[in-house]
Structure formats: structure tokens, C-alpha cells
Length: 245
Image 1 (cartoon, one colour):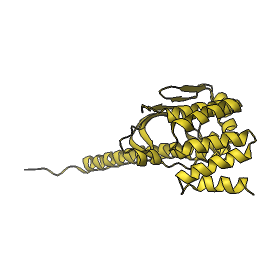
Image 2 (cartoon, rainbow, N blue to C red):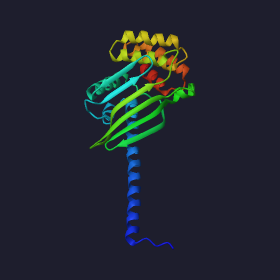
Image 3 (cartoon, rainbow, N blue to C red):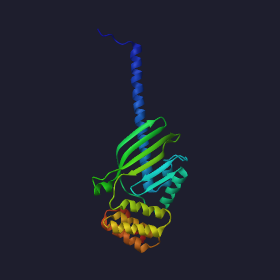
Image 4 (cartoon, one colour):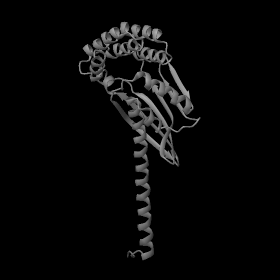
């Protein structure tokens, strides 16, 4: 014969269930907050909004930003270096980045006031061109401050092997632009155009370099070529319109 649980046992069981539910919901809320910070960091970087971008990072000397590809590796250590890089990049690039990001296989592990996050990241346009493309492997380390979760480390690993090195050449060109080596950047972007004449992005990058060099005519020519390849690119339409005013 089964005996009914005592009132004390029932109360303890009820409290335990309530505690477990609260614990689980708290974990879900923390993960949602972490995802939001990661999304905001990307959003504000694409918008070149340095003020809001900087709020997603800890301003500490141990912060790390790393981007690794087949033929390049870029690393900035400490918020001062990270902030200076992005502030300069946003100021020079000016035109917002409109690419759509897709994230899959996200894993989030929370350890007290720290969190480790990994996920696969794709650019939608790359997936449309090549459904078999490998994603970037992304790693984030966050810590919880008085202002909420903030990034302390970001690592992006490009796992693709590009026989035409389009992205690598493009990245190299922008590093040169960031260093104000405009003529050298134009030479690299021109090489990318010759290697990848069917890519709208290579003409866009070359147009940006010519614009920085003060050559409006060549900037328009390359923006128009980019638009010819990708007619629905609103960013190119906007740039061409501004330059022809």
C-alpha cells in the first residue's frame, strides 16, 4: 500500500521543482543575452557604428580579436588596439556593409561570469553561389560585467580553400588601405579583378580604393561594373548616385 507523502515532503518537492525551473529559465535568459551581444557586435560593425560597437566589448588589455585565413592572419591584443583598428576602418570605409550573416550549430557554455561560444558562420551570398561552401568557424569568449555580457575574445577561422584567392586578395587590399598604402591596395584589387572578373565584390573594392585615391571617374566605372554583375545591389546604386551628384 502506497503512503501519501507528508506535507513537509510535498512542500520540499514543490520548492525543488520551482528552483530547478528557475535555474533552467535563468540559463536560457543568459544564453539569449549572450546571443544578442554577438548579433549586436556584428550589426554595429557592418553599420560602422563605432560608439555602439565599442559597447559590446570589454575595454581591457586582455581583449583579443583574431581573423585567420589561408594566406593571412590578423590579430589585435588589448581594447586600445582593437578599438583603434575598427575606428579607423569605419571612418575610412564609410559605406555600410549589407551582407546577411547566417549562423548555425551554435554551442554556448556558461561558467559563472564567463561564457564560451562556438558556431559556424556563413555569408548568405557565398552560400547562394556555392551551397557546398565551408563555413567560417567562429569562437567567442564573453564575460559578465556590471553592464551585462561583453566580448573579451573573438576568433574567426576561414576554413575554405580558395583556388582563386579572391577573399584573401581582398583582405590584403583592405589591410593596405587601412595602412594608407592606397596605390599598393589598388594594385592588389586590380589583380583580384583580373583573377575574378565575374565577382561583383572585387569591382566594389577596387572602386572604393580609387575613391580613396581621389579618382572619382575610376571609382564610378568600377562601381558600375559591380552593379552590372549584381543589379540588385542597392549599395552600389547609392554610391554611384552620390558620386554623380
